[in-house]
Amino acid sequence: MGKTHNKEKSTINHIEENQTGWPYNWWRLMDNYKIGVIPLPLFIIAGILIFLEVLVTGKLPSEIVEMVVTCAFFGFLCGEIGKRLPIVGKMGAAAICATFIPSALVYYGILPKPVVEATTKFYKDTHILYLYICCIIVGSIMNMDKRTLIQGFLKIFIPMLCGEIVGMLVGISVGYLLGLNVAHTFFFLVLPIMAGGVGEGAIPLSIGYGDLLGIEDGLGRVLPIVMLGGLTGIICGGVLNRIGKAYPHLTGNGKLFPESDNTNTTDKKTLKSEMVIDITTFASGVLLATLLYMVGSLFKVVTGIPAPVGMLFAAVLVKLISGVSPKVLSGSQVVYKFFQTSVTYPILFAVGVAVTEWKDIIAAFTLTNLTVIICTVVSLVTTGFFVSKKLGMYPIDAAVISCCQSGQGGTGDVAILTAAERMELMPFAQIATRIGGAINVSLSLLILAHVLLKYNLVSIAELIN
Image (cartoon, rainbow, N blue to C red; front, side, top):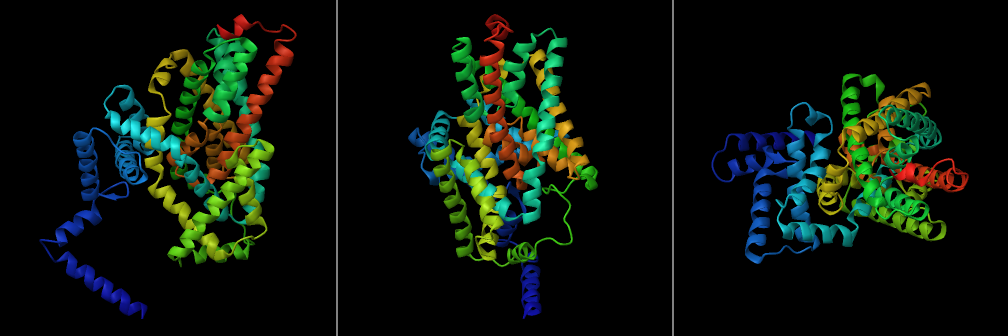
């Protein structure tokens, strides 16, 4: 039966290859030429329709149907530009371009205003990023064997902690050598890099600075540093990916540990069952991810821990107790693959338009700031690389997680893991970003309030100047 099917399929392909004219040439154009995942003819039609609607009506609806087309068109276009850049195209430029080109286009008024307004409204009203993150996290967790899951969460804190300590010391030392005050370097350059992004990092940090130091522009000072730190992390992720391709023995391509012979039998069966999938199983995978996110939201109400982290813990528990069938697990893996390949660049475009301020990036673009930021992030990542190697982990993959410690929260994790081509590491990236960032911000503000300022070890003037 299988041979007959293959023979028929090859005959059909042979006939199509020898046919010319309509519709065969059109079909070849659709199948062989793509921008991202979009066939070139559909991509061109999408662009024409978007700009026609803007020109004719003067506006663009922020409804999901229109936004799917808009974000897909611009996201994959910017990603394709990044991929085709010489040298840097293979070092994460696609993720950088998909995020920062839209931001620059908005700032310089090149992107049509209706597109900007509709995209911003859609992104902020729907919180689409959280759907993306929950599907990626749940899918990647369900794709791990239990041994790797347990080992990963237990061991990843060691390179994370060592990387942060070394990164902080190096950043402060470089700032001091460049003539900066030590306290100012730490609290306004080094700490924002490792604060865990904007929502859980820069904003709480700026509020704390406002209360303790009496400054009103705390967010304006901190946010550009967060963005430049995230940009450096994206570049480091892309470089690590190239190193992994050059030296395959250093990477597990999304896995933290070498697979053992006694890998859980159930997990192996689950991976095999991924090949047999129907639409109901796919739907079950989406529902599993969203249900676990609702658990995380309830967890946030009770504990105050961010919903994605609560969801992460819930997903790990479900995996460890074998709480869902192999068929549903395979569905969540297919959902993960779909979001990874088809939704990443549209999401990054929306992030660039809605929440990435180009003027803030330009404001922080000084030689001194860049030197401190680059040295801090590189030392953080390098330390993670060597410490994880000593622990028997794949150093490239562990170092990618270290990159996420300098990312812009969930959006930064997406961009860094996209540049590194290791979206499977999202659960660990969320731990590094959200929990690691929260700990850094909380401890630093406590030390600032109850030690440095209380005992006059540092003055407010030294900190803010």
